[in-house]
Length: 171
Ligand code: PNS
Image (cartoon, rainbow, N blue to C red):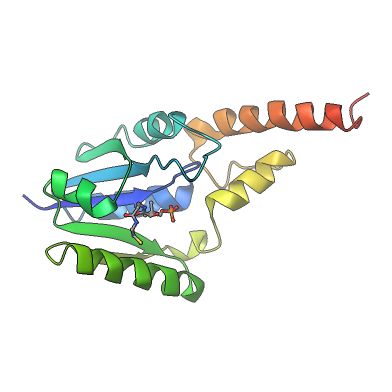
């Protein structure tokens, strides 16, 4: 059975992530989407990230959503995974991704990293861009799966309003 893991922060999941998930799921028997729960990085969306991913992948039968903490290679070994999948958007991603894949390869030579190029229409997209757009009330429906648009928007409209209120922008 071919098993791979697609790890990330997914804070929140974007259409670019979903594109990689669908294409990876078509290449393997079982795909684990690993949501990093790392104490050094506080995500905007905490446990909701797993639920949002479950919602947007509910129609892909060979995809499982799990959270992990610690080293990716340990998590991959625990689940008998043979490959790690990462998306590459542009050359700017490459240096970091190469270093990460080489580190993982030194730590776990039996697990390979496979890079999928991001579909051109999502090449500019990142979770940070989604957050920036949502923070200022922009239309995020072209950036995240339809079923989570409201969750992301609501999270931001409440925090934006609190901030604006604190700053006296809302009278
Ligand atoms: O979506 P992201 O934030 O670019 O994903 C980064 C991720 C989660 C793949 C990476 O930070 C990771 O694997 N973290 C777990 C810790 C680890 O194994 N680090 C060693 C590789 S340098």
